[in-house]
Structure formats: structure tokens, C-alpha cells
Image (tube, rainbow, N blue to C red; front, side, top):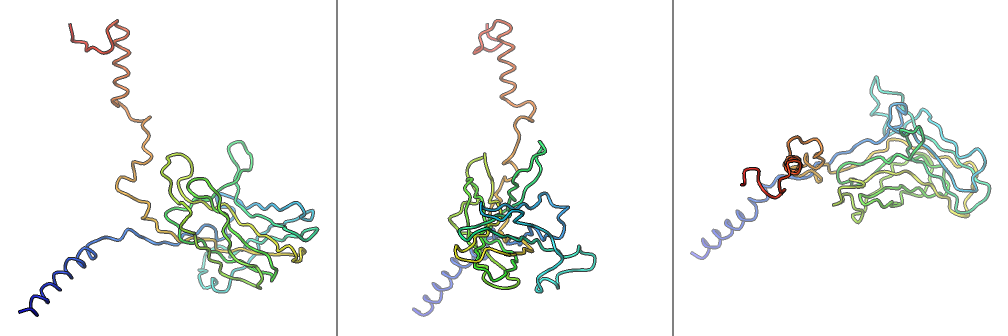
Length: 267
């Protein structure tokens, strides 16, 4: 008898704890989204720009596109695809020290001026990854991102003390806010650019780096909720709203010399 009661209780507990688990729908949809493969520069919404610290040699840094692709990515090239390209930067400085350069996207604004372009990243981003070619210099590669509250974060990517291509993966820390309660300002995390710093005692001549296949991994459904399509409703386009009608009625009564707080039918 006791054994039967124990079996019944066990089955009841399994039903209570397991059924809700199977009945709940997942709210995650993890995707990998390409930012720039560097193969179609003329088709992008931005162009890449490079700037450097004060002791950079005149005429540097230099930036250019070259044909090439990391070997592990070569199998992804299909017939009819654009010619694989990579983006390269060459830097040279006049003295050792804390030298650096930054590579970041820009665009031409409505006034015809060049302005920074921060690439918005949708969803909840878990990592940003790309391929970087190293020349075995003790230089440090970092990425810059702006959170949903407007703060820029510098995240270490890797030491460039290696030769050839390397797939660099940068995890996004959980302390970086990717959504904000505020309706104004940035709505999501955004990619600001790359920064490469030299170790103070490292050689400062003939440094070269190449980039390819910049992308990120994100959960796109975490930021979607019931009624998501109403978040940007424009009340200025709503016709016949109660506020508009009330304002029109108030103005009409005032024009007729009637008290604003009384109805038209009152004696």
C-alpha cells in the first residue's frame, strides 16, 4: 500500500513540474547577422575611415581593399558571388609609445559633411566576431560599442602577436545595457569601430592588419513583446482624436461667448 502511494505521489510531482516546461514556448531565436564582408564597399550605407594618434608618420595610416579571404571561409564562396575582398590598414609612427589608430564607419550627412556612422545591432547581442590578420607585433586590438544609454565601452579583442588569419570572438558583457526604458536616444547596442594600440616598447614601423567577415550573434526575439508594433505610433497622424476634438469644441465655445466648462445645450 505504501509503495503504491509513493508511486502515485512521484507521478503527480512529475506531472506538476514537467508539463509546464514542455508547454512553454521559447523566447529565443539566435541568429548570426553579417555587418560587413568587405566584398561590396560601394553597396554599403557607410564607408570605413581611419585616424591615428599624434606621432603617426606623415601619410599614414593608409587604408585599402585587397583580394583575399581566410582559408576556412573560402568554401563559402559560391559561383556568382562578388570577388572576396579584405580591408587592410598600414600604420607607421615616428617614435615608440602609446600609439594607436581607429578604424570606424562614416557616411555623408544631409549637409554634405562626413559624420560618424554607428552601426545598430538588433536584438540582444551575445558576441561580435571577425577575422583579423596579424603581423606578429605586440599591438592590442579592441572594439568600441555604444550601449542603449549612450555610453561607449572599449572591449579587448586580442593581442596581435601572431601571424596570419585568426577568428576573433568578443563576448558582450552582461553589464552593458542593450535596451533602455527611455524613448529618446539609442534604442539598441551599436558598433562604433575598431582601435589598435601599440605596446609602448614595440616597434612602430611597418605595422599591417587586415579585416574580414565582421558579424554578430544575437537573440532577436528577446526584445519583441506583445504590442511591439505600437512602440513608435505617431499620434500626430491620428485623425479625429479626442484631444483634437476637445480643443476644437473649446475654441468654438469661446468664439460664441459661452463658458468653456458648460455644454451647448445648457440654459
